[in-house]
Every structure is written in structure tokens, then in C-alpha cells.
Image (spheres, rainbow, N blue to C red):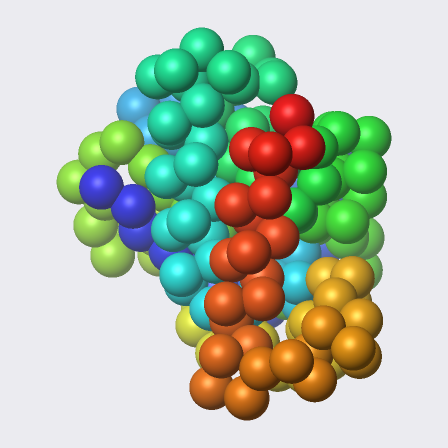
Length: 167
């Protein structure tokens, strides 16, 4: 199962934030990845990244040692973690965060529990992408002009899928 949700908040210490996420994940037996939601173009973006990452592990073509990092890699559309982490990782300060829970029947209660632990406010609207999301993601004007607005999300999905080809 894949559960995706968004939040807003202020992260003062990235390492402390990530430690809390890892601790929570281990305690609940959930795989959790957090992202800078400003580069997420809808839930399908993260669903696709999870599916590609799982497939990479099944086919033994994974680049990283953990499903969490493989998901981050695919979500970024990059083939190297040194590019994926700065692009998709959570940022210090006020911002939008996207979360994905994988491999367990995750409940709203668990999502809310994590947000409370992290002192974040639930806001799934941060997952909605727009043309600025595409530009931040690295999709240029020429690429954007090739599709209608209702197909913008497919440009991101194409970048996610390209990671397999670039590996």
C-alpha cells in the first residue's frame, strides 16, 4: 500500500527532522520518505516513483541500498543521489513537505501522529503541481509547450520513468 499526504511547517534542523522520521518509521514498521513538496506534481508523481523503486529492487537494478532512497532518486528524475537529494529533499525553514508511506496498511491516525511529532500542519494541497512546479523540476518551456495543461503531470512522469533508461 502507498499512502501520500502533504504538510506545511517550519523545519529548523534537517538532521533532527530526518531522525524523527526514521525513528517513527522503525517504530511503526513503515517505509517513509519525505520530500520538498514544491517539486511534487500530484500524487501520481510519487506513486510512479514508488512503483519504479520497488521494481528496481525486484529486478536487482537498484542504485541505492534502501527503498526510501530509491524512491527519492526516482521522484527526482535524476540518476544520482548527489543530484536527487538537493533537488527533492526537505529544506530548512518554512516550507511544504510531501510524505509517502509504503508497505503497510497505513492509517490517517499514523499520518496525523507523525505530523504532530514533527510539529507540521496537514495540507494535501501542497501536492498539487502547476507550471512553476514543472520549471522547478527542470522541465523547460519547450517541453512544457508540447502538451496541454491537463497533461503537465505526464511530463514529470516521463522524467521519473527516464531514470530506468539512464541507469
